Length: 471
Image (cartoon, rainbow, N blue to C red; front, side, top):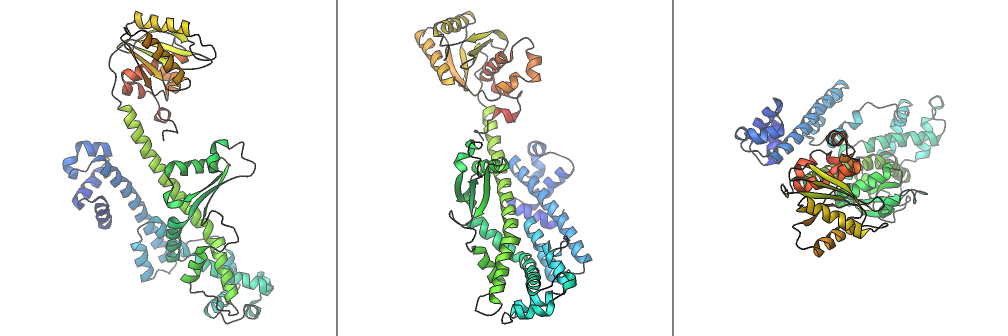
């Protein structure tokens, strides 16, 4: 690890260099972040788990960038094009994007139109028109006709010269940095409905005509738009205004012209140079920068979503247990009724069945009799009600039953049932309850997760415990 990486990590984390050096040494020896944060605080000077995760992530990024930096320097050196100024810029690059922008003019490419034009000897024309816009493009281009190379007329020759300048303009690292930052701060993220997909994409209707500032898009909305795009329902693009038209001049065109000192002063080549600028933006840079920024947005949104998911999952897993008390678990339903399971203070299944207090059956009297019988028989203290379909109706039914029998030592609690159905059909549940129907297994899980949430939820894939709405 270079000293520069150590210094940067220390600066970013607001810690001392020796702390970073100690933490990196432990990571390189194979120690994990949890192990270091828990058992090696005396070595790292007290770095906590959050700082260690940030350090590990940034260390990986910086090391990858250093490896890429070496490859780029070697490639440009091999081409004999590495100048002291370029080397200085490459060594000073602090992001992967900046590094790749600097390498772009020297990157090995497939044979481009600009390269073909250079091979046909048209580059001097491009240089002449750029350096001296007083020259007439049509007149000057007649001197560069080359039928054998496919440049039979002035139009083809000028197009070749245009391709050369477009490539030159679009591969300027400082310009790319300027444009990227401008779009990041000023552009709007727009999602639009794909024609004919309205019915199929009804769940994305909030994004059929949606526009908001790119810099402020929250992770959940960004991910929703990306899902809509992946499903072929939405177009997602960057625009400068809600009513932007493809024919409108883009602010980035002016920035390109300013970077290359191109001005329309009525000279013969000014209009042609203006066209070069427009094509540079629309053909060379727009798609590239938009893809880059959307990829960064997706990465940021996914990272934030994971952080929210982790926080919510942690909160759910650490919910205080109700304790070892006899509990009835109710898995609400409508057509198929409410599944019921009784577990003792240790979570052992004592009884199970189904009641139908909800529509369409609404057998309230029969359901009340079954519920009361089980409460009294097993001295039930808690009734856990899953918060899924028909939970409100089931909760009201139980509340009415308990209100009518105040002498009962039982109370109802609404429980997050996310993942209960996944668990009930899992191999784990089948081994645990081979003789129970999957619907009853779900009710058992609901009862147990009130008694001891952590012990029950660890049986379920985290992706199933929290719904997409939670994230």
